Length: 165
Image 1: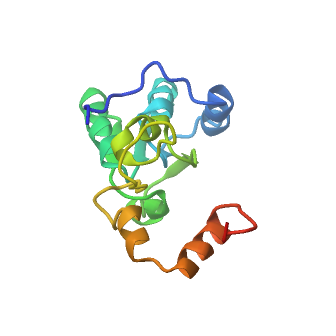
Image 2: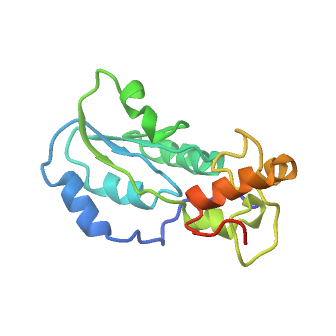
């Protein structure tokens, strides 16, 4: 796999609307990007942080964390945390959190990197984990899953009314 990079050319959807809602109050304290990805939102948040503001970003993808570590070196107001955004309260307990932004979904580099298993265009291993170091690839699960287990997953999570195709 190629080394992940900060997405300086990437413009997140609804960027200005998101930043206006997050930063408009101009409160001092910590702002949170709960889904760092490749840093698209974080880079823009850092450009508009109010005086005394800091940005803490969360992600579970080790490739995103590698990119975040590079951004930490560039900007002392930024910190990356290798944990899910559900841990924000625990990680930032006692801190003054001024605003939180979470862009739910997966980032396009996860689809672009065929070894991740998210692409429907390129061949690659069937992995489908946001954090390849946690859990097991879906290919392993499928090898041992029963027909009923697969049907349940497709029915509950696959938006298909007839899981026994």
